[in-house]
Length: 344
Image (tube, rainbow, N blue to C red; front, top):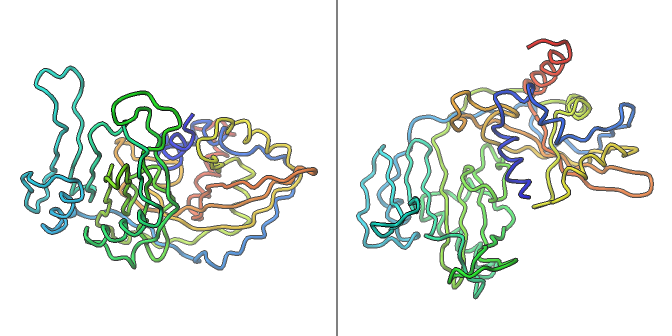
């Protein structure tokens, strides 16, 4: 079960309001009412105020960037579009009588400020001669520059692996790593985005390499952003109030099959100690999404907490995603109170 793929949409853009659902209840630890929640994490790296960003107009990618993207996608010989505000798509090539759907292998979307490439038949791949992590990182930074990005506005995240269900000839394969990728996160005021490349499309540059160094896919996501509001960050006690109110999310350990069992087990903790807090940016306000079902135009901050649950005879380290803005916490706690009063 791919828990992370489920949690990311819930965290960033779940139902219209999480206050009307049980999502937080399912993903939050139900700690005992009287459990000590101890804050030991330094807040030195958390600004007193953080900007919320908002998308501006479309990004028109320069001709050199578009040309380099075509080369990176091995699409030389194709007609390269001129810089424009229009969307551009290349579909995978199928025979005229092919019975299944056709998919986009390359696209430029000025509205979202993105360029995307996915190789044909991405579920297939060989595990032979995948580049070393060092080479993957080196090439990712090189290609980021070729696509017009300033390295000073990027931060590297841990590398990720891609499993394929079939080898390059279409035969079934088990536990078959067919690609390795790395995500270079966009930095806003020195703060990275909360992602590791598992959900490519978050602001920045993500690329994955396969057998013999072939580029399997990449995403350049760099919308025009402008400062929207400068808001105060929450205190430790305000964030602790969210933990007690079950308005946070426990992060899964990869594709963790017993994730919900682990979350429920946290109710048996004797103490809960916050050891670290790190601010990140995300797409969309914590627990909300636009009512028109489109991706959010806002880039507000969130927090990742590291905590230690002490069960008396054992400890467990837990990663948590929580709101970091005072306004988000006030909204979530107010909605909880309203729900408890039977209000809509």
